[in-house]
Image 1: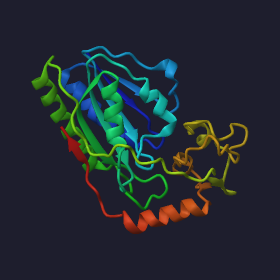
Image 2 (image 1 turned 45 degrees about the vertical axis):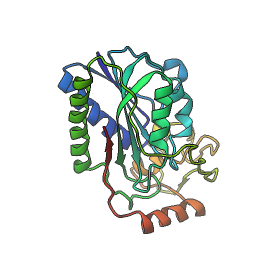
Image 3 (image 1 turned 60 degrees about the vertical axis):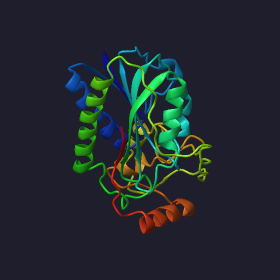
Image 4 (image 1 turned 90 degrees about the vertical axis):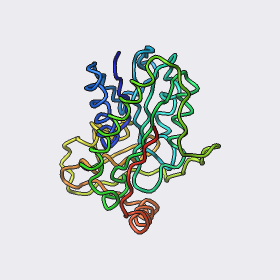
Length: 261
């Protein structure tokens, strides 16, 4: 048995929650943990295999109420034959809409048995004033408790086949939001340290000149803004600025994780 934690996490919020849950499950079962970060390596040719004894913990951020389009093909190519799975979404304090249901349905169709699910909160990509600093220690405590509950359920299930659990969401899924084809701007603080280019999950930022980026590749995860040591990266598009203001005005009140088990 291996616990296999698969996650896409440009700003590391999904990684924190997914790995916290996975470490607890692996520790309780005294088994190995495979850390499979697909943020920059989501080639369908590199998809892991799953035995019936393995446990998959899949963690994804929510983009406009859906799973990220950039890794949709990868997720659709995850296949198993009765592997137990736990699905986790991380959203920016507005709503996760249909993302959890979308994940459940994909894995259910591909031979997994989804036995638990969770919706956790991470600091919003567009503004650090919404869900600031999350997941925080309280979130991580809830993630560890979720891990304990998963272990109890898995031990009760044993080798028995089970139906995938019910989660919140609607089908047909909501249409994907259409964002402007822009990239974050760069001011004169830039020292060309190249942190942004090296960490960009889609390779949108030029490795020759970090001030240049390809809007057709940019997914507006805003990791470049969050990690820049000189505060040189920023959003200058009016629509993104307007969305950030709307989020700050309407979704600043703390939301708590939701667990389905």
